[in-house]
Amino acid sequence: MKTRLVVLLFLTTVLAACQAQGPAGNRADFRYQWLSYLQGDDMRATCRADGPDRLRLIYNADFNKEIRTYDLFIADGGTGVLDTRRWISSGNLISLSGGSLSSLLDGQTGQVSLSAEQVFELTGLVAESGFPGPVPVGASLRSDGYFWAGLACVDGVFGIQVWQGDAMREIRFAGLLESWDPIAAPLPAASSASLPPLSSVIAANRRNKDASLLYYEAVVEQAAIKGRWRS
View 1 (spheres, helix red, strand yellow):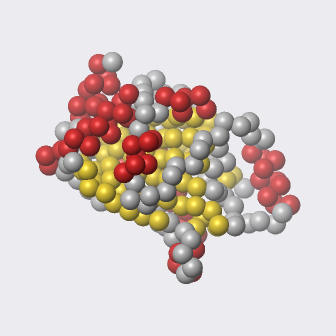
View 2 (tube, rainbow, N blue to C red):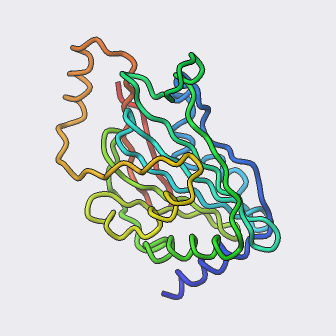
């Protein structure tokens, strides 16, 4: 309980803001950027005691169907900016409906300004959801599964949390993010259905001659998510 309160205090009193470093919207660039983003490599690179604190929440709702990301940056006085992104599938592409070529390749983006009270509310719900509680070390994450990942740099300390399966019932912040998201699209319902071996999923994709789908898997460590692409 003490650890949660300390982290909540830090998250709600950040003094510096920074620009979002999310993956490029172009679908072709995902293979080079997504795992780095999921692992929080950009956050680690700037995570120091005298640097800005950051919070990132990622919803993987079957990678080849929909992804939602939320990066929270807090300014002087406790107000914040929430950078939101959404990539959805259209056929076999992560895309944005809209009718143009660029919209078929680029994700939807939006930003919303948060008051200090709203920042406090969101970080409080993240803490209530179990961040930075016991991390499911050794858990396996799959691109075709459903999970939330949380990453934060707080007072120079980098930490993570992952929710999947039954643990997703502990999440308290999803509804609030959905209500604030300027993209104004509901979050996909989570699925806990059993998945076949990833190798068989990839093999079926090859038989269908569909080269556009991407697959990855990751292992959860105490303070890291280590991912790799599968082909």
